[in-house]
Image (tube, rainbow, N blue to C red; front, side):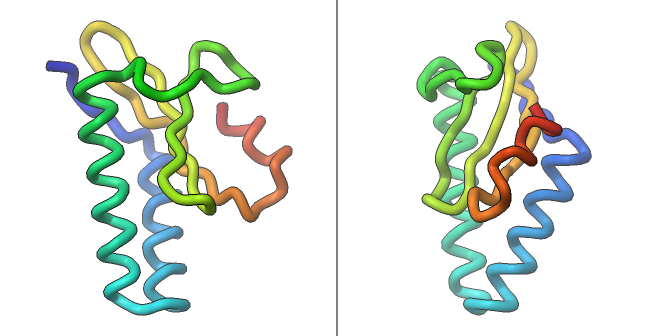
Length: 99
């Protein structure tokens, strides 16, 4: 089984999204989002080819967690590296900095 690695940027992104969701919608919504992230990561670990490749970089896959959040990752034989969790409400050109 591949090792799951979250980059510093991905950790910061998730922290920001969790804080935003909790502040705007409450703890229950944060927990629901955390469960969606967890389910998505489990699917990626089981089958990293499950999600499509990014249009910006064919070495990077993207997993839509919710219509507001997309997770970007790469993988090798040994590990799956989560690069970023992108809030799709941001300016789409910002994602080019992360992938």
